[in-house]
Image (cartoon, rainbow, N blue to C red; front, side):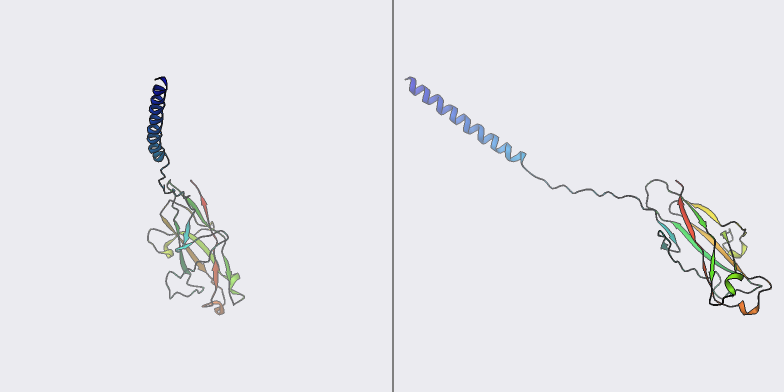
Length: 184
C-alpha cells in the first residue's frame, strides 16, 4: 500500500506542478506584453532676428530697403530716407531680449565720386513714424528689442550742399551692418 500512496502523492505533486506552471505561464505572458511608446521631441530655442522679414544669419543677409518716399531723389538740398525693420522673432519660452545696433555704413556707386560724398546717419523711428522727424546723431542707432516685438531704424542719406549737380539722381548702394546681441 505504500507504493500506492507514493504514486498518489507523486500524481498530486505532478498535477500541482502542472497547475502551477499553467498559472505562471499566463502571468509570464502578461509580463512579456509590449506597448509602443511615442518618443518625445526635444527642441531648443533659436536665436532668430529678422531684418525686413528676412531671417538674419551669421555673416550677414542682404535685405533690400526701399526709400521711405519712393519718388524721392537724393540731391544737395533734399536728403533721402529709408527704414529698416528689425524683429526679435525668437521662440524661446523664457523672456529673451536682443540689443540691436546699426554699424558704419558703406556706400558704393557706379559714379566714383558719389560714395565719398554721401553721408549716412541712423536713428530710431520717432513717434511721428516719419524718418524726416528723427533726431540724427553721429553715434549709430541702438535699441533693445523684447521677444516678439520690432524696432525701426531710420537711415538718412545726404549730399553736401556744394556737391556737383552730376551727383544728383545718381544711383548708389548703401550697406549698413546691423548687429544683434542677446541681452537676457
